[in-house]
Length: 209
Image (cartoon, rainbow, N blue to C red; front, side, top):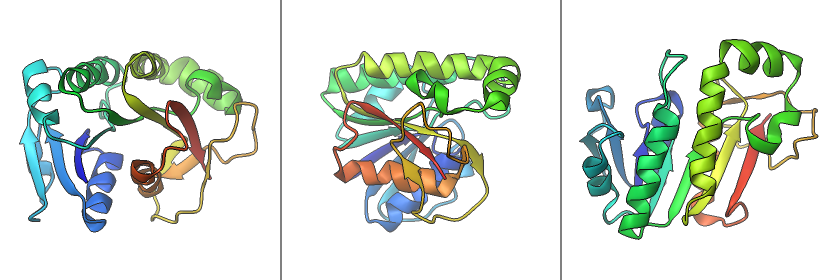
């Protein structure tokens, strides 16, 4: 499958790239700083560009079978790169007729808010990461209002760890029994599984150990 990845130099994005290549996909990474991806593989290429630049995004999506978005803002706690970048991707895909879109947001967004504990609701997302969370909420709105074949992936807090394939997904917002954390490698594992599975088509899937 021809797969385009936005946010490819981030922690989850790099895992998606590596695992997709292992699975034999033809991977295109879209990044502002492609030098961060030191990959020499015949089925890999990296396009330098800014997700806020509409022509670059439109050109990147041409001929792809699916698009994955793992956009982040690095250490910045402000900004709108997730929501506005996703809006650019959605518009480019709709204009180009590319339909399959998998977008990573965060556990707690939308109807998964009830899965969070006090700390995540009122300290992290209520105070420290308030702007980041609001950006994720807007990001989800753009995806859900699109005409694409979308799946939203809502992972818990990222932790270090290998790909295990052993995690919970699709639990309800009233479920408070998860650990609220998951490795980046397992997030990538779940994202790539969606390429051949329509179980979460037009749905948002919570993800955690």
